[in-house]
Amino acid sequence: MRRLVHLLLSPPSRFARLLVAEKRLTFDPVTPEDMAAQLPVFIDMDGTRAVGLWAIVDHMEGGYPEHPLTPEDSIARAESLRLIDWAMGALHENVTRRIVYEKASQRFTGAPAKRAPDMEAIRGGRDALKAALRDIGSSAEQHGYLASRECTLGDLAVAAHISALDYFGEIPWGEHQGAAEWYMRMKSRPSFRSLLADRVPGQPPVSHYAELDA
Image 1: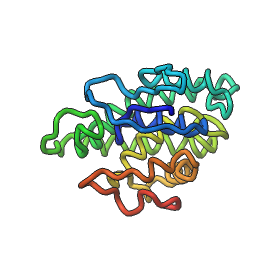
Image 2 (image 1 turned 135 degrees about the horizontal axis):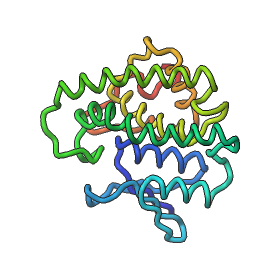
Image 3 (image 1 turned 180 degrees about the horizontal axis):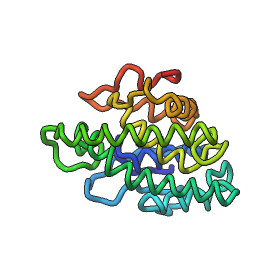
Image 4 (image 1 turned 120 degrees about the vertical axis):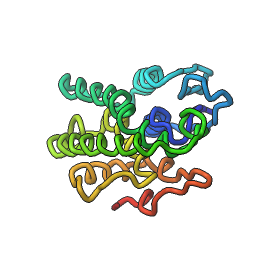
């Protein structure tokens, strides 16, 4: 059986989960024994190990060419890859780390050991999130998805972060209709089902988290 070593609310892990599910592959989710290990890790049926996000992307797109998530068009492909860099770079540092990693424990995010949430960091993350949602909405209104008319790796990378933020009710959807419509399309994809079923003990999601029309 394929295995994916991951952390429940860590966006790189959520991206990997979405990617494997988009390839229509089943896997056993595994919680890491070493919280400091490089994650996520995908172990294929033949024992091949892909360690880290880019290795998993390469393994999935190269080894499972069915249901491709890399656009053939060079402009759309470049934009999809830019979105991955943005999601795992600026969005991660300026928004997700300041909000999700402050609210959730190390066990589910890989963040430093639990302490009282830094409200100043959270407020800064919320301010940065508003600008990010405007960019997401603008791209979705232009393309349908974020890089093209079809779902790409870039959509999965961004949705991995947005889903973790939405778990805690941090997205002001009413103020960002373009981003809201894009995310409803993402939530409706079969690959999202396992993410919408996530539950952190002692930290349940907001009531609309798993609703496909909210």
